[in-house]
Length: 580
Image (cartoon, rainbow, N blue to C red):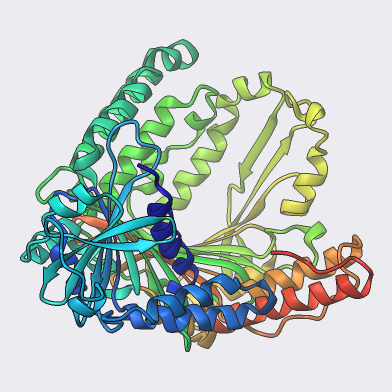
């Protein structure tokens, strides 16, 4: 059978995807999912068809010349279909047999009048035939305001569209998927056990690499690899569902969700039963311009166990010997959480990371500093294999603290010479310039100091002013906690966060813009005003994990303005219109 009609129906769905981001958030699992069998491989759900059609046109208007005129024709055609219920929800059910290039699709379509939807035709063997260009689609009445729409008659005829599946789907989605279903304007979810054969094949291929690991890293590395492979198999077997979602609010912005849910009472779900309050650490760092600010709540038992196991794999699988210098297990143990801020820098050549600082909530800050000092002292004993590869590294921490603006701080230094590193010359890289751009010298240096209650502060440059600000903020003075720009973005993030991160798009633009102008990439650059940052967050509770990325509307609008300005400048300079 020809597949042109199926391609047409898929094209309708695909054409709609750019506009799905313009739907307002609708809480609750859409009713169309109730008609999806619980053994379905994957499904895409649109909560309200009418909003989708409206916003396809809205997005096209916003995009202007970059829009797709065909989308307006598609929305007009759907809206003009007799008997369609544009206020209802819609689902596209996907299934794929072995060796298929693309999945088969049947669509659950909301209808207000099935007879009008099928133009009053008589059913033939329970199906109505609907001409679509050179091909026909087949339609079947599911009752209660839903019709089934597909290319292959047998698929439509045999589809089990019975009601009563929402409870089972909710259990499959779990906490992570349920958040996605409740928050987003469109979501996609995969029933992972339905792909067990493909998962087993992938795991077998990964496990076959064990011999190569043993050859390169020895028996201990091979043992660590086998342990990791067994854990990966356990995780894959414990996984229950994967979900992804997309939401848009014209007042706030766009959000993208990805989530993974594990079977109840499985060993893997135990990693993901943590309460999270990552936001509290923003009250421990100074209010400052930043490229990136990221906080972590690592206090949960599941997170501690997961990180500890991961660090063990890393250390055992290291073939260079360099990781022996770092007591990774001790570095994680006793750390309840913290935050790192990559402060904005006007002079990239003077050191991109020179305004970087860290705050950690540790059980014993003094003992932690002693551990770091011992680690640095022992570092040289573990660098032989790195030296053989042409990398020379030296590191040290001061024996005694120095008082800086009333704060007792230990200075630390690390230098790295990669001029003889294998392959560096072939790559055409200048190691000294790389180090200069990153740290303003041959390697990172900075201060370690106790601050606040159970607080440890570290800077990535020996800048007394930065250290003083960090220590004062750790004691609650002039912190980033009350940032209005961050608050706008944080409002779009999920609750119970174990990680949250903000990217200062305005500061990045104001650093990269002058450089682009200096190198002749753009003729001029107008500094960007303060913008809400891009945000990311993760939850790890209820036996699953959710990762959300958000882009505030104000930031989106500014980015579109910049693109338009750059296109106009290129056009005025004879370069024609820019395509994105």
